[in-house]
Image 1 (cartoon, rainbow, N blue to C red):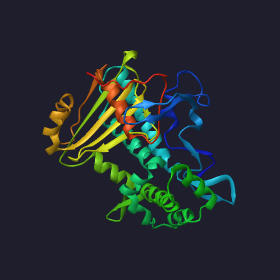
Image 2: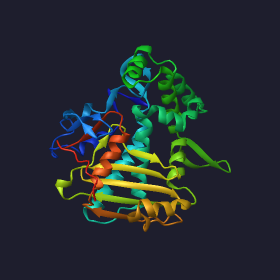
Image 3: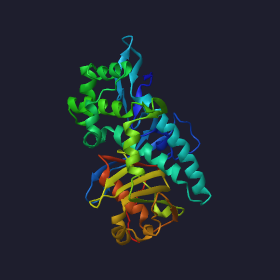
Length: 337
């Protein structure tokens, strides 16, 4: 729980560095273009502004929960709780992209690891605080039943008023929402031991894992994923949202996640109730044939699909709070097939 990091990124730096126009630059020099959403209804963006990745989509001490020995050299924060998911997600991402380079279909376990990290990105994103509280807000009232768990949870209530005011002013939230969000994240990510016949059978499992498994391992659901690659640069590149992954639930109960992995690679994952398959055949005919029951999941790779970049980018603008990001100075919203 201890860290000395001054900035807390809510979109991982390695995800932003994929956008760097100079692919061989160091992590400290990596940059990305930022576009303000000028007219959301008409998909109009402002002029591009070059941002440094190590300072972008980050806030000083965003996940801070308490001090160590009354100094700021080292302090308690939630950020170390994210490390496992970032490490697993980064490794899965490398395997995924290596498979795509070879035009082989990535494995479902790697897709699941990537999606798990993206859901964490959504939960820990300050632009998604209200939505996160609607999803796991009940965890704000749950205190882990260990001495350390109780001690860390109590620190959140004693955070500096000046720090809380700065964060709340930046993201347009109330003090109650900020503290409840930190408590909910902490309680959801707190690893608990699972017992069977009084023996520990699993060391690391938490409410966040449980919640994501309900999405990715739902019974009576079908799963499909599609990788979209653009080799033709004239088609443009996929945008990155300031809210991270584009996730939505349809009225029929399907969960869709659209994830940008590289400027020219995106991933669509759909988890849908079996009763939704007929509707999916109408709305996504190119995906319908890939649905399989009993957790037998198959994916597909599509190259230079007309209109796919434009549709993805429209979804991204609709979902974003106020900014989108990419490595190019031109952005396409052409969704014509």
